Length: 615
Image (cartoon, rainbow, N blue to C red; front, side, top):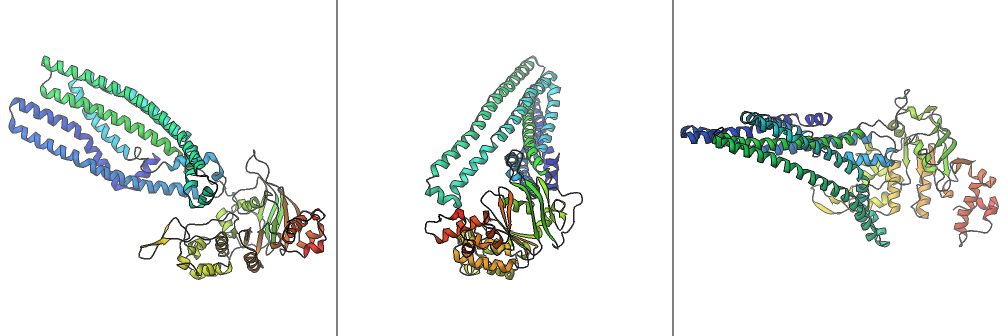
């Protein structure tokens, strides 16, 4: 019912006209059978003047039979387009409603989503416009069975009963096909993944450098073989079943024809009766076959739609607490992580273990640690992409679980280490950081200037309107093709991502995750000098492996194995000669010593000497 209501809402007028056409079309076979009978009987009786009238009527029926299918095809396609748009909108609205990341990292959800994407407007045709086809077939069936009953009640029952096994078989096959599609969904997704690795420009360098083309092609073909194997087995099963059903239908038709011929020979039926009988049997069987197809295809479409409905019916994965706050006020005290523990699920190890951390308003905090220490996970929790497994995160004393995620994120600006490179223009790449600022070229330019990418943009063919993609074609205002877009270097992309972050300059919390990892030494120095100005007086969290970039932070927090093991200023941590001092000395020696390491690293060197070195 939900799928049909979607179709009705997508095009009420088109649906009403289509239904009318189906009703008329359903009566045409019966009209043809009767008009043909009248013509034959009148010819046999010599009533040629009446024959003309029935001939005209039959011609009108033939014209309708020739025109209505084309009109119904147009309406069917138009309804499918409208329904497809409606279903796509419904699906992606629901996906956008998932505020967290957990479902996107769940393979079972990815399989369900892959099946839901197959529930397009065209695929739902058997459920939507297919219902109208069913109406047509039912009308045809009832009228022809009535005709057949008048001529032979026994044959009418025989033809109807013969359709029962066909219906049962088709329903079973439709369920098996959907189960097969769901079973090979993972292989289909992996096939697409390997195909993209071969064809996507982002993977072209390594694919060719490492000679991965044949390796990826074989992987892709392997997944394709798994999918096709399931389809092949299903097709064979359907072919066997349909052949047996066709044999049954042929036997019933042959028995009926034999009876009609013998009845005519005995004089029980006229020539016109035999003609009408043959047409009624053929039409009834065709209507029954069509009805069985309608039901079977609708059943299969509904099974697929079930995945669409399942995904669109999922609640938000980050529900807001019952005492949810409305608009989040400007940060006045600070953000506190209180005994925060986190792991992705019970089968995985703890990523964070009892973290206590305060980001006071206006403070500058740096977070350092080895890879896997939990730094990026901590950022995800601050952004509320996940909720802590244990513990609380408080914004001015309010648990962020009681704050709508979109409201929380509206109060922060974040540069992720794995930032996005959008196949959009320069202006759009910056403007997506704050869509309200997208039309304001002045704000975009100011953000680019602060990120140190304005000079790069000035040198591009069309400035801020330059397409940053080599897979799409740039177009001028008069829509004439110009050329492929421009490809930026990694460092230039990072500056552009930083500009996107700095565009959100009216936020309470600024998080920078490795903001200079892809930059050269001079560019890194310039960026951090500019960021010091941006962070001044603002609540900020800086994550960096380059310890020279964090030494001026008010508080440096060292994360190790999911726990905070040290915190303090640069000087305090160096004097403590702990984990931070060791890491700092190792990096400093990498810059001073051509061999990369000194023999006295474990001794941490003299703290005064270490403080004099900036990595």
